[in-house]
Length: 187
Length: 336
Image (tube, rainbow over all chains, first blue to last red):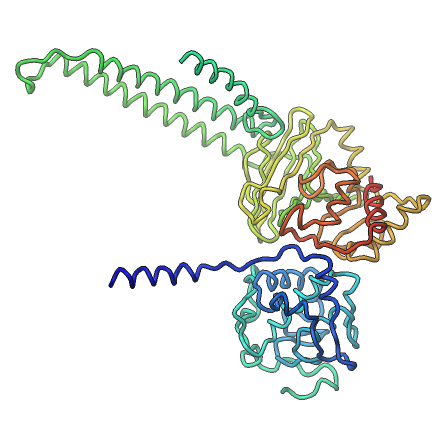
């Protein structure tokens, strides 16, 4: 009897050893399909392409993609305006207030096509996959609920709690005053 | 038995041929590497001699059995003294040899890290999974950025300043020097020196991720005149070929596609700092940190599908039409 219990718990432990799969190469047709988001006419929210769900929402749930997004955040100069999420010349992510909504499509569209008030378009600077990875990471910074997948840790000194310690908004004071009159009150 | 011996004898040259070549500790071509090679040769020779003597004495003791005496506890004073002398000699020799090697090893390894007067300093940054190389100079025409290939003048001490960017890497060119780690947030230094012109291969010697094995670099030692010529050529801006329609189209694509967001080509608006500097990419022998020999075909293959050639590296697959791929590869191959 005891032996059976041991065997069962061993089997349960082994079943827990599932390793996250990294998809290192995205097939070009799939990448092209992932570019086909259906955005609402006002540029806020909309529907991701079917391929995004067919892949299992990999840019929100996969730690490797989140880590790559974190590297892209530095490499493509996001820090110049948004700092480590507290905002500067650009709006903050940590306060949980999303100018264009917290959906992945909105963030993807903001990066790909740019936004008013000097947010540049990265369409010709990054690939579709990279934009999705970066969008996933940015959503993690200001997420309302904690994700089970976390990006890599900071090597440099921490300037804020880890990204997966969401909701960011309750960990932080509202931060700097709204940058634009249309930013509105804290939700 | 004889056939087996012959087989082993025939395999020996094959084994020994692994001891020379462009990446071998046993084919030292520079001061620090030669001192390490001498040290290891001496240790191997002396330890082999000691082992042979010990085995011979053991065999002698086994073969020359002592005649059984009546009383096993009886002491023979002469024999006791002889045994005592043998043991003292054995311990004394061991102490002397180990002390000598400890001191020799101390001086050999100290000479690797001691600051020698250097003629040239090169900044090397380790990234996943390539080497960023920078020659700094007050003269901007001699300030050079390149990747995965280090040129040094023969017979001169060259200081390599090593920093890690993402994780810990280790710089190891076995024919020229020992290993030195590249640690994020810290600058380590290593002095290398090549006594003879040649191409010496090195690679990352600290596990740094999935493509650790494909993180090689070349050190090319040239005489002073050749080195100066190379440095001046590398310091120049990229070659412009507006006469060739395909190359001009490739240049325009390179600047308008995501390529220019990560790669720099001096003399053009491309100034990305995330990927290797491509100003003179066609002058290098390999691409992808020792992955493929540098030809137009392998450049095209690398651009077309980097994640199949070196899975996990940070070069994304940028979708290009076949005509665009041809133009971009022609442009890169023209960057001599």
